[in-house]
Image (tube, rainbow, N blue to C red; front, side):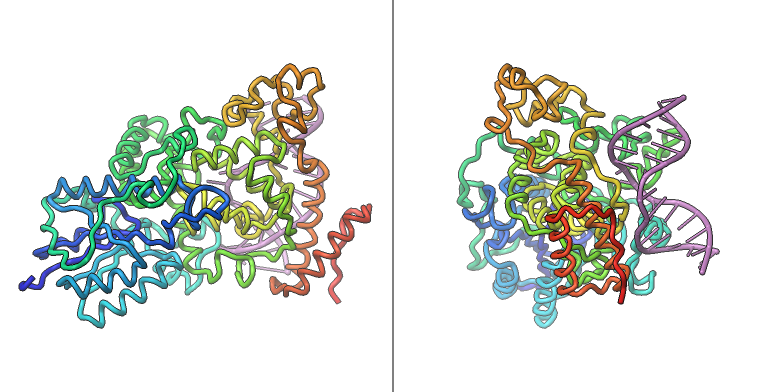
Length: 537
DNA sequence: AATTAGTTGTCTGG
DNA sequence: CCAGACAACTAATT
């Protein structure tokens, strides 16, 4: 290219044409455009040792969702006279090779606050700048730029939703139109010696062909996202009256929420466009719900967690995380495995975990139930262990939101009322007394009468025989008794909170271990004393 | 230093 | 359907 006006559009998330400022800028004044996606082995290479089919980082459902999103992006680019160029390898190295081979004057990509991209992007930016390439990296994944909010708050992120709202105010772009469509794109430039691939199939990436019944019903891609958006918005009353806590977590034929989260995760849908569409609906109705419970409120929750995550070092761990309570979680791999593999013996919990494996998506409140059960509610297993399972299996798993919610549910940060524990029996029952959700995801319990389906171990043997489901043989007995386990969890949480308070949050590993030994010792001796105050000395 | 408010708990009793 | 007990947390605000 003698004219020297080539642009490279690097897609990572933001897999869309609409409201994509990086792509828009890349096209401006460019003779040629290289729309690139890099297949990163770190994320995509099969890992047979993982606990579920997939790579070391992601279950198969999310990998497939990503591939579908890429196919759709390629097809949408082709409609505009371009195409998606697939390259393979470590993204930093691959891009450097591209810069050497191609005449690139501009590098454009969506800004990303995740630690993985923060580290990668510094390298890429440095190389590009040193080579005289202009870098354009706009924050278009969220409504606000997390860095701006943190700056407004004096360098620290707000730790409550309300204070976040106050700082954030109205988004700057809220009342000006976003770019939703692009006209013809510049032609794709000469590849040189770079090897370019089509979007691979799962098989080409080295995965076994999975059975259809074990795969998520949700298809990836911008086209699917916009279709889903239109479907959700078409019911104005539903949009206007949406209140998150009132949704039914057991609804699965028609989920109680929009299920747009996986599309927001990969950027198949722009959160800013979604926001504007919701405002348009609100203008057309008499009254509507508000944050935190409204649909706009959900988008703001997303921004809230992005902001806290970006401004908190070690946000994805308990240690050295200044907003995270230090709690002596136990290290019980058997309990963790039972939870992960949907064999806790509590049908409501196990059915949710089956839905996670099969669909990669569950209702928000269903996530609450299993997260509470694993951590502060029943099993007292470390939230990081549960976080890992969600991170792998959810098709919408998002670093900031997932880590934030696990801290929330485990009462490690954001939320502290550890007395409030979801009952693995009564919570689901109040939405779905017949147990249809359980019957669907745990067919072994299909014929269990509704009187026993949430507590099948209480069914007389004659009933179990008739239902063709013997507890302890066909379906497991409960791994813990909820009544005593939750009581013990509350006691431990109380002790841990007292320790954190006494030490002003600066709990050393030795102090945490000492508390752990004492708590476990107490439990073994079945000490009757209700609650011991820690006496600071 | 004191007060207020916080997306979504359970169980009992009216 | 709703209120209150349970037992009492924190960050932000005043």
